[in-house]
Each structure stands twice: as structure tokens, then as C-alpha cells.
View 1 (cartoon, rainbow, N blue to C red):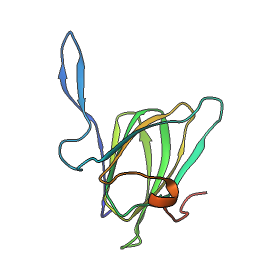
View 2 (tube, rainbow, N blue to C red; view 1 turned 120 degrees about the horizontal axis):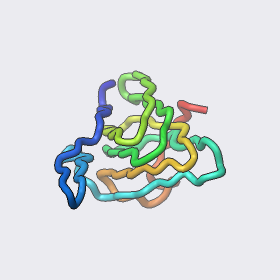
View 3 (cartoon, rainbow, N blue to C red; view 1 turned 135 degrees about the horizontal axis):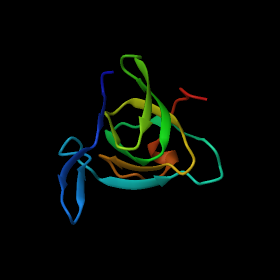
View 4 (cartoon, one colour; view 1 turned 30 degrees about the vertical axis):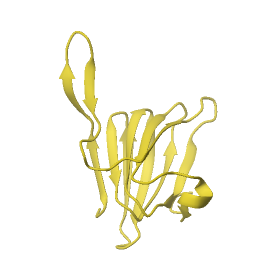
Length: 128
């Protein structure tokens, strides 16, 4: 889909001391970085159903997700089954939503500062 790129994170070094995994390498200029943790005991959680006027990258540390994205400009919709190690790059104007397993953990980063859902999220429901 135009504006979306999904890949596996790449192990770039592994020795007796540590493993280094590369999530990104210059694809997105980061101004905001968050860790999202889906709480245990709450079951699957629907997150998203919005878009932003800036690019983002998401890295699944653990867990799974059924994830849907829609390009606002082309109308394209694509579904993904994300697992630990997946990296998702989203350009601006990509609606994103997903059902995340409980106990999932995701790193989410964006090109612009995040103030609040009211300020940054442009709601568009693509997954219920």
C-alpha cells in the first residue's frame, strides 16, 4: 500500500555481551517516542482508528495484532497480522487501527510532538 512499509527488525550484532536489533535507520525523523503496553487481564484491545498529518514508525516488542491501515489519498485498505519483531512505517495520512493481544508491548515513534488525542488524532473508524 502506498505510504506503508512493513518489515522485520534486523539483528545487526550478536556477541557474548548483547544483541543489537535495528528498528530503523533514518527512515523517520523522530520527535516523539512512546512505549505502549496492553494490560494483562483485559483481553484484546482495539487501539487507533485515527490518522495524523505526520509519519510514524511502530515496533512490536511482544504480542500480536490484527492491524488495518487505510491511505486517505488513494482509498487503499490493507490488513496485516503483526507479531514481535515487526516494524511498521506509516507516512502521513494513513488511518491505523488494530486489535492487540493483552500483554502486547509496542514502541511508537512520530515525526511530530504528541500533545493529546484531541490535538493530534484525526478520528476515522476503519475497524470495530
